[in-house]
Length: 137
Ligand code: CMP
Image 1 (cartoon, protein in one colour):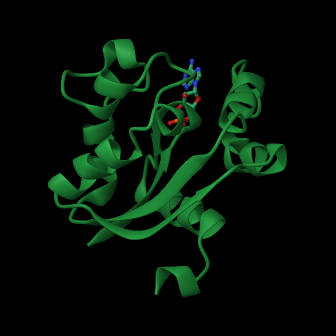
Image 2 (image 1 turned 120 degrees about the vertical axis):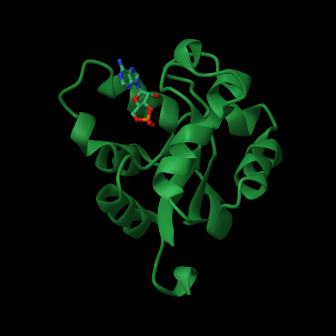
């Protein structure tokens, strides 16, 4: 069993498709082990995406991720990291396979509906960023 972090981003939350996205996970044998809706501060978003600090899109990324509420979740299941990324589709929705979350709900590489951890190692770091031990019990 693996755990991974998923974020439903402000564009998808504003579009009222939180439930539809969660259904993709549940219908594909991923369990919601923990979940909450919140608004990221600039500091939160900057810290969470610190690996992208030097990238040209960093400022826009922080601006977008703080523009509205997000839903953060821990998904649990067999091969959860890879399965979540498969369900999400490519980062750029224009390149995402048909039937993936980004192909169906995302507009652009910035407003791309969801985030998912890219490795088991980063999943543990990202989960600890948002959830306490008590919330994961
Ligand atoms: P996410 O998986 O949340 O990780 C970083 C985010 O930066 C990514 O999804 C995109 O929404 C955003 N982004 C914007 N431009 C780019 C780019 N050129 N390459 C990768 N990510 C980008």
